[in-house]
Image (cartoon, rainbow, N blue to C red):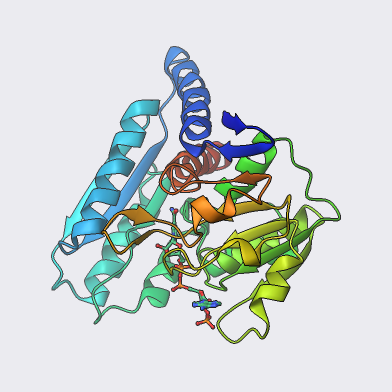
Length: 289
Ligand code: NAP
């Protein structure tokens, strides 16, 4: 699960994600053996955004790997908001579909918020619908956003108990920063959410037992931001000066002081698809009652 170098631990998100997918595969195999209908994920892709196409292909592959069904609905970037809403509405009513995901970003003429609000909360496997956001804030069970949930699983896998720990989340987006903060709070951590207006960011980060970097700035966090022995989870996906994939954390520098750290690539990133597939199974089981 992890590579241990001396006292330091590199959290291997790729193997942890693989392990979770293999566990899911066993559950889906069981459903097959029982002759049951299989969970089905529908992914809507609007336009021909290059990165989105790759993400959607990976989601399709993930479904194939665990044995779930998937549908990819490819729509022209010129589709109107009303037409897209109609497509979602049909999927909401389709009993065969358990999870619906609208790949973001959407073309500029379509309001993301309006579209995400139309998805049936029971099928909202991205966990972005206001009903699921409210459940997360209220500490109730619902579908939770995949990348934040993936970070919780990484901590579980290294047997780290968040109770009473100081978690500093840098970034307050609706898809990463805010949900991971509420998930940490649910685990009884003391949570600070920092952002671009936070004063004395270094000092704030140095308080963290767990530092979550989610700002989208290549190698922004060096070891001056990290308390010795802290756990560092790096959500960022950026390109460095050599066009090489890197996180928000200067990995080589920070790994000298952190007790555990996720690399980029191969840390938080691979967890997202595993969590999406888990959410689809959860939605399927809940809908089946
Ligand atoms: P986002 O919506 O752009 O939000 C960035 C956040 O970082 C904002 O809250 C912003 O503060 C804050 N911020 C920016 N510069 C800062 C600075 N210098 N100091 C402190 N805070 C700063 O980004 P996102 O969607 O959350 O994504 C963050 C990163 O995670 C990106 O690199 C993205 O590609 C990556 N990501 C990875 C995955 C995955 O691994 N599967 C999933 C999602 C995102 P303000 O609110 O004040 O502007």
